[in-house]
Image (cartoon, rainbow, N blue to C red; front, side, top):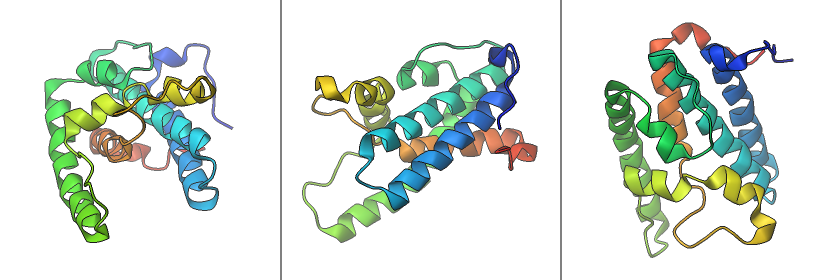
Length: 165
């Protein structure tokens, strides 16, 4: 069980640990129950949200609220933004090669800003998917960005490597 301090907003490690749990849940759903796309996306997007909130809290001491991933990313330090973008570009090259090999036209856009924008409200959109609010050019594409944010936090705090209780 994840420890639940009375003020989670003041503990970046607790946010990170919780993000790890949602990341693991998303992975399980993706691998073993692909038909459950909506909960998989909600877990993945919430995981990225919590990673960003953890990173902002680590860097500024500010406890951010809200679900918009673009807004949260804008609160991350310029140094971390740069590190995350550079890491993403490496993953993007691999991803583009995979898309090209699949020969499924058209190839999706993979630039960082497009992906972040398209996925910015995935948690809320997929939580209310029954209302039909997932629009064109939106959805969930930010899995690799989530991994890059996670890796940035791990670079700053390698001792958090096994944070899932």
